[in-house]
Every structure is written in structure tokens, then in C-alpha cells.
Length: 254
Ligand code: PEP
Image 1 (cartoon, rainbow, N blue to C red):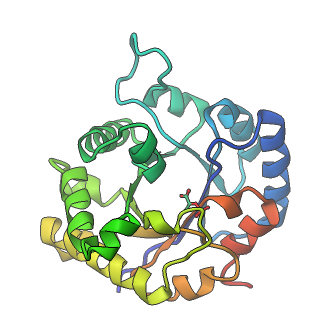
Image 2 (cartoon, rainbow, N blue to C red):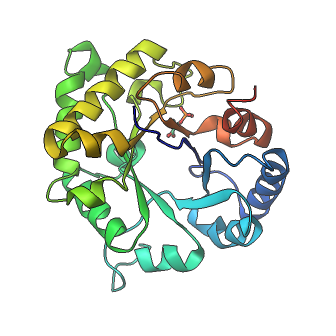
């Protein structure tokens, strides 16, 4: 099995003013000092990116944005460009989160454009996919995931795909307190890796990191991380408190 470095990413969603973000990042920094075998990433709202970037300089924490627009500049009122994210200190960007698909009309096609733009600007895309409860109950999970992967990665070269982090987030498990069982999550991750393998071959599929997201907490991370195809977590609610997020980042220790 490929040696994939774990990624633990916290999605702060539309929480935390700049002052609150600073308090959270300062506390988190202290709690995870010395953890150097995990890529720890935080995704504050746009307004707090630069202040958080300043505080994490030289630390083991990297910065992500929660969204962006694919053009580098222009008359696109209300949008943020990849160039702006780079200048704010981001190295990652979350793309196609289910809340963006659900409330802001994002589709596999717009997600594909954003992944291409992120790669062009050397931002690491965290490419979110996942089925809804209805789709799972109708036994459409695998067909939905297959379509999200193939359309999201359309016309992306193999050496770029290696850099992408995929986040499997079953919509029914986000913010609901319902986690997919370790086995359900592993089954979906294995299937996603197979989709990547069918498109790009085994060697590429083996290096792509696939995160699980959906009510991850410090008390369920360990069982997820021992699964062979789970390489980390995208965390919402539990990333809003330093102690709970640190407990997840330190999953090997706790
Ligand atoms: C998320 O927003 O990506 C997420 C997984 O949220 P939560 O951990 O709160 O379910």
C-alpha cells in the first residue's frame, strides 16, 4: 500500500470573526506543536484568512480557503480569485463542498473548472464528493460517486490528479452527528480509489489522498484512520474548538 501522508483539515464554514479566528488558531497552535506526521489544514472564512496566515507562519498548520472563482481577476462582484488566495497565504482550497452544491448551485461542471484553476495556480484542491440520504437509500451511492469523480476530473492530466485531495462526505453525515460506520466509509473510499484507478491507473490512484468527512470527532477518528483507503478527515463542527480539533489531529497519540 502506498505511504500516503494523512491530512486533517478543518472547515470553519461561516463561523468566526477575525478576532475569534485568532483566538482559535492561537490555542490550536499550542495544542498541536510538534505534530509533524500529519498535514494539518484550517479553512477560515475569507475575512479571517490573512490574520490567520500571519499567525501560522513557521508553524505546522497550513491555510485553505473554502471556495473561490476560477478567473484570476475581473468584473465578478463578490468573488475571490486564486491569485487573491495565494496572496492571502492559502496553499489549499476546498472545492464543491455539498453546502455549495446544495445552496449555491455548484455542479460537477463548475467543480471541474475550479479544480483546473486551482491546479493552474498551484493551490491544492480538496475536491468534495458524496451522496445524499435519498441517493443512498435508492442504492445510487456508487453511481453518484462515479459520476462526481469522472465529471469533476474531466480533462485533468494524470500528473495533476496526483496532487488532488478528494474528500468523501456523505451529505447525510454532515453536521448531523451521524457518522458513516468505519466499514461504510472504507467501502466508499475503496470505490472512489477504484474510479480514479479506472481513469488514471493504479499507481496514480494509490497516491491520491482520500479524506472522510461527516461528524468526525476525536472519539471516532481512530477507527476511520485504520481503514486502508482513508487518509485523513475533513472536519466541520469539531474544528471550531481547538481542543476537539487537536484531538483529531493527534489521532495517533490519543
Ligand atoms: C464538513 O462541513 O465538511 C463536515 C464534515 O462537517 P461536520 O464535521 O460538522 O459533519
